[in-house]
Image (cartoon, rainbow, N blue to C red; front, side, top):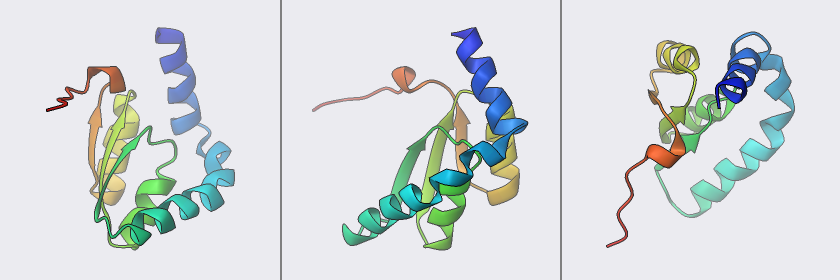
Length: 96
């Protein structure tokens, strides 16, 4: 998994412009979230932080999970988002 981590770290920190094409898709997701009258959202994979920025602009509370510690620190500093470093498969889930 280390190689995959390095690839994501590169694109998120050295080439964030690679995520610029995602704005329309992310705007659609935010519209769908708002239609459901939700105020809190969990984003898995920060990328360039575009989703976090757009969601905050719409008044949503955002929590983000990403495997790259530098990306997590950057998004916390830039947007004040509750961002944490880790892997999705490590999230404790209870189906009760």
